[in-house]
Length: 261
Image (cartoon, rainbow, N blue to C red):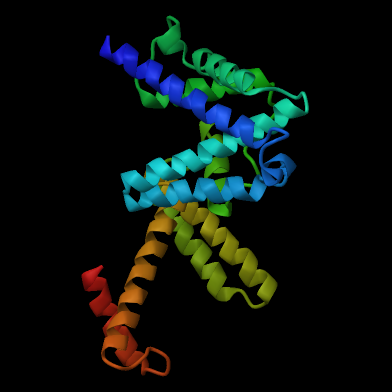
């Protein structure tokens, strides 16, 4: 009984939020909200999605709750814009994704048996392939993805039809080969091409080791930022700065910062 009451409360709070968004976009609402279009909110939608990722990376539940709310607002705004122009409404969005989830989980809502998560993913991709009548295993991977994520997604699709390294050792050998080719490149164009090949191969290494390269790079970049800021703060406390500091002192301070972060 308590669980049912909780679900009713969730629906009620979502309905309240939908009502607020409708009011904002109504004739007596907010001029800015009324002027928004699918295209004008594109950048904001991307920003909110990245802020959700940042909250996840930080492990902050309060921040994640807030950022998920902001992302949900973007969904409601886009649905409201579509409803105003007669394209579709929020109910159709919810119905569409509900039907898709049921259709793509026959092991839950049907009588299909699966051995584990990997088979679930294979079935999901096979169902998508049939639904969209894709001509290529790579169809549906968006070019607008960040470059590392795009490469990782394409490689996963290719691996799904058997185009893959037999083990990670072969990919690591390919990394050595690409690194040698980068060292031998003699023109800016060759260097850029070989550097791209090296990055693409490193994405394959991450995939074969069960990592998402986008997440790995974000984590490494976060560590660099924290360590560099630590170096700056310590130098400031000592009444100096990093600029103009001898290389050996910078190296020593970097190693110290690594020990603390």
